[in-house]
Image (cartoon, rainbow, N blue to C red; front, side, top):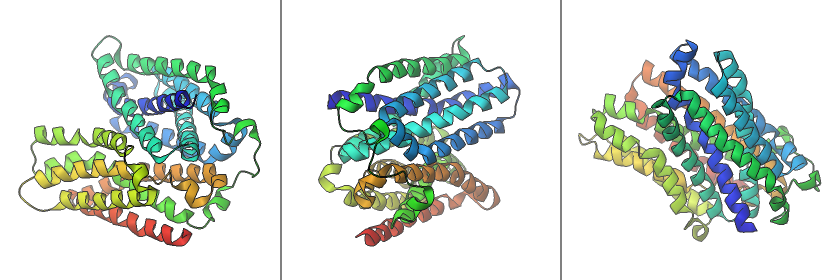
Length: 385
């Protein structure tokens, strides 16, 4: 039963990753359908991010009341409805309206499943869980690309992923009992010995501010690296477009493969040592990107090192041991908020810096974020003993 439940959890995380790459893949065509500027993709993205943040902040209370299985099922149903709404929309305003349940569903399932796996399973399963998210995020551009190459168009791409989500919703509702027959769901029946924590109460817990800053820095570094790598390599380092495309395309799959491989070794090292190794290699990767040699091999290798290093951070799985099982859901919820804030605002911030100063500051920006993390995580280790 536990193995079947794990399969369900992994599939649910694939479904979480599926919608994440659709907007970027489809927007060049979508904008023409609605006759809106290219920049309007940012509006949709911000609405989705706002929904994920709101859902993460509510995750403790909602998951305690409904249980992880039901929250997961409802969340996937919401994203399925939102994706179907995207495919049927005839105006940009309607797209924005459907972006709300899109974000709420994604945020709820993300926080709930991270909490459940951190509470009940070994570190390797957390690593593999996020690897399966990468599988979903890697598949969806191909689905959209295929649809754009046929009469289905971008609407067909969204509809296809919606159908996949609908099928998964049916499977999740049909297997709800597995969550109760397997390991105990912290939210089952809504009965627990402790009350949900408010955001203020959670932040006041010793060490929580440190872990939030660490999450912010890590996610900011990962997304900034992925977004600006191509521009930096081509415009500043003079790497030819073909070579750049090959190496940049390895960044996200590198994270996915790294997380999968990391699952086989993380339990041997433990969460704290694994985090230290990951942050150390992240810093090395940022330095390699910035080494001012004429040969581009160091910068290209640095991107791969950063991608693989991002797989070696088990901060979420360490949450129960750091802050207690009873506080897990609340803290994971606000950790996810730090994630979304870092991914939403820090890459555009570097864009402003690159535009106003110089794109050559890219490796320095990454290095500052990389150095921030060991400073904060070691402060966290000292504060909690």
